[in-house]
Length: 157
Image (cartoon, rainbow, N blue to C red; front, side):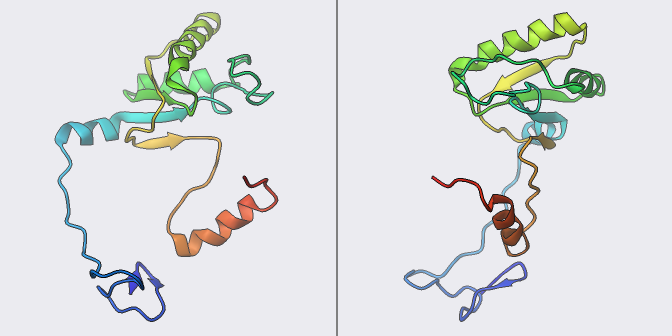
């Protein structure tokens, strides 16, 4: 069986994996609603911690304690002027979304740099994701070694 350029040893196309009873079916193409396409093309998703909020001391007690990263508000303002919808996303609990909104509004006032934005505790579709984790996935065969190397030495749970 082939997945892209990756060959699974001993399996032919549409043959079941060991232990499976039914053959694997090809996925049927789905149409994407026009509004979803529009949202996807216009939205820029930006992670909050270590991308906008400096987060220099780590999680601490869950408070938002730090200054913005230099240049973050200027860049978001430029994206807003260009017509992109900015969504700040976070892995923090939904209960902190209002605190994030207030923190951004406070710094907009302090820096005199304004832009429209939403806050989301999920990861909706977007034209681009801006995050501090820095791994661009292309395919498993090529990327697994790079992923393993990047995680090498990190504590595993």
